[in-house]
Image 1 (cartoon, rainbow, N blue to C red):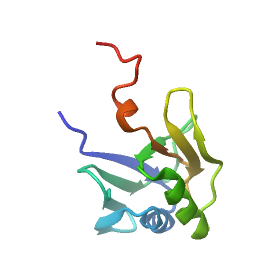
Image 2: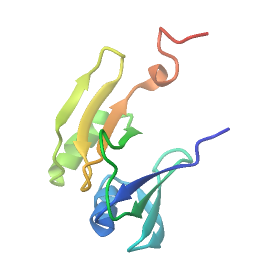
Image 3: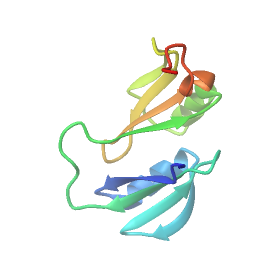
Image 4: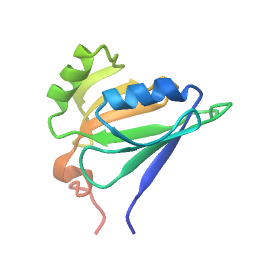
Length: 125
């Protein structure tokens, strides 16, 4: 089994498309105002957004994008005017993470984990 795509809800699809394009995702399906789908710059996973009339309640959606040169990538995004809630910092689970929100308030975590992404020292064997 392989993960194909993740789809997140959006109240303002056009703003969300602009935002995700600024992160470096490539638009491959343009069905605005109802749907958009992107390719990630690395790997085979795709990411899509669909228009909704109401966002989910509660904690909402958290999206993780891995970037090998996290600090430089965050600096590049900040120069584009993208605001971060948390700048890159090392976490106890051996990932380096930066946190921000998309235009709909979905939490995005940009991170670098390397080998620890799937094989941390505490992995169950």
